[in-house]
Length: 163
Image (cartoon, rainbow, N blue to C red; front, top):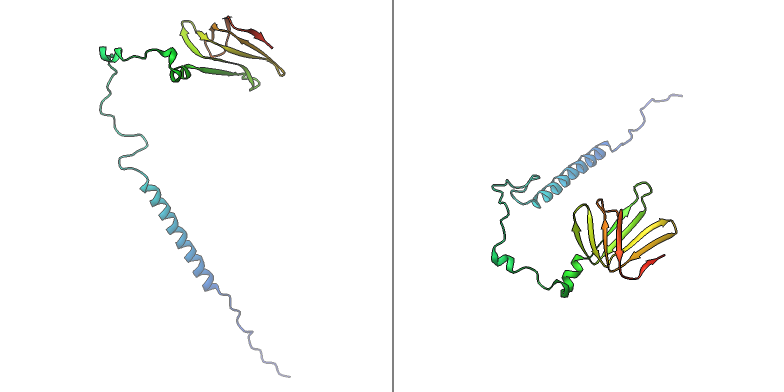
């Protein structure tokens, strides 16, 4: 018996096709990145920068003229838009628990010296414990709140205390 030793047939690996597809995908990815970068640059306005335009001159505020002073707000009590603008509320968070410890709201406030506020129609809610809220309300109040949290005060008129 004679056997011829012939090499087995070559296995086609398609290596060239794989390299071609890989290079093509790489070129498409690079082109896509360039397109996205150029689109992003088109949104920038000329002269824009992270710092902003150079400031040439700072103009200090001037005093109001007599005509400007004469056009002041009149009849604030009968203007609901202005009344709504002066209403406010403050919520104080306990830094240890992260929960609300007190909140108060008013229809109008006037700052006074030494961290005091004059409040009209105040409603104060003090969170005494997890399931208890002490609510105080009245016609007017004079409170001391130098750091937003109420420290002391007097509330006059109105319904008084509810629990």
